[in-house]
Image (cartoon, rainbow, N blue to C red; front, side, top):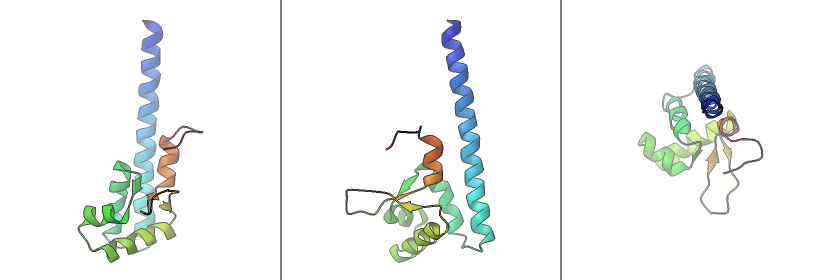
Length: 112
């Protein structure tokens, strides 16, 4: 029982550390965007990315309740800030990845 409890304790410590790293990354994104003088709408996207590190322009559009061209413009700005990058995809839908976030939550060698 002690062996298993030690494992559970270690997993809990690891999870707590990852949550702190994710919160720090989210704060860092907001700070970078605010310092760059970006729009208030853009500052809402880090919250979406923490829930889902892979997004499409229509998802950003629905989340912010804005037009498709406005959502596309915001995604382009996040690409320029290196917060998002186009994810490799076999579909015709463009999927964007929050690379820094996926690096925190994906063990080395794994991929989604």
